[in-house]
Length: 376
Picture 1 (tube, rainbow, N blue to C red):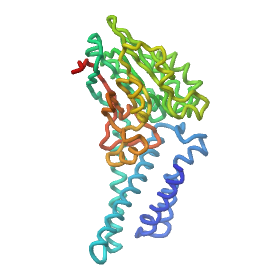
Picture 2: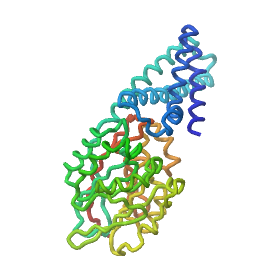
Picture 3: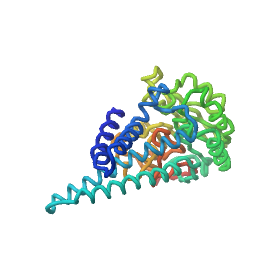
Picture 4: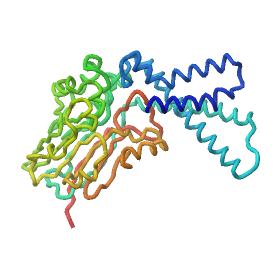
C-alpha cells in the first residue's frame, strides 16, 4: 500500500503542478520524470538494493535523496491545502482564482517545499539535545529517588547516521552519568557487515546499573538473529520478553522488555508481557520497554508503572503528526498518563533515512530522573 499511496500522490502532483507549468513540453517532461523517480525512491531501493529501508549509498547521496523525497511529500501536502482553499472560496463566492494566480501559488509551494525540506533534514541529522523528564512513581523505594535513567530510541544507524553521529550520541549520553541506559528499539538499518563501524561506539555506553535494549520493527528487517549477538558483545542486554532486576542499596526495580509486533512475521516470539514479567519480584516497581506505544492500557492493567516507547518519531512534522495518531492509539509524542501508569513516547534519537525530516518535532536524548510519590 505504501508504494500505491506514493503513486497516487505522484499522479496528483503531475496533474496539479507539472501539467499547468508555463514551460515547454520538454521542461515539463523533465520535471515529470524527475518527480517520478523521486516518488519511487523506496521502490527503486527495493529493485537495486533488495530492501527499501537502508540503501547502501554514500552519505551525500542519501542526504540529497532524502531531501528530494521530503520535498516531494511537502509539495503534495501544500498542493492539497491550496486546492482545498480554492474549493472553499468557490463555495462561498462566484468564480475563483485565475490559472495564472494558481500557477504562481504552485511555484511558491514548490519553493517552500524545497526550502523547508532542507531545513527539516538538517535538523533531523543533528545530534539530539538532552530532554529532561521527571518520573514520579507511586511506591518507588526512596533508594531510587533521583535515579538517573537515559532513554535512547530509534537511532536507526545507517548511511545517514554513521559512526561519527553514533559516537557523538554516546559521548553526550555518558556525559549525563546515568544510572541506567534503556534503548527502546530500532537501533539499526542495515546488515551486521554494513553497520559494523556505525554500531561500534555503542560499546562505550556506560551506566552504573547497565545498558538494556529491546527490538523495534527494523531489527527484524535485517535478521535479528544475526544482530542479537552483536548487541550482546557491545554490552547491551537485550530483553526479549524478559526482565532484569536492578538493585540499589537493597531496594529493587524491575526493568522489563517485550519484542516488537513485527517479530512473529520473521520467525521470532510475539510480544508477551506475561512472559516478560514471569518471576519478577512482586514488591518492585516495573519499568517496561515497548517499542510501540500501542497496548499501553493493557500494560497498565498488568501492573506496569512506567512504559517507555518510541517508534512514532513524534510524527516528525508538526501537523503531519495527526496522520500518525490513529496507528498509535493517539500516543505520539512524549508524556501521557494511562490509568495509573506513566507512558513516555520518545520523539526518537535518530529516524529512518527514508523520510529524514523534523519540523517542529525535535529529536530526543531523554534523561529521566525518577522520584518517589507517596500515595495519599
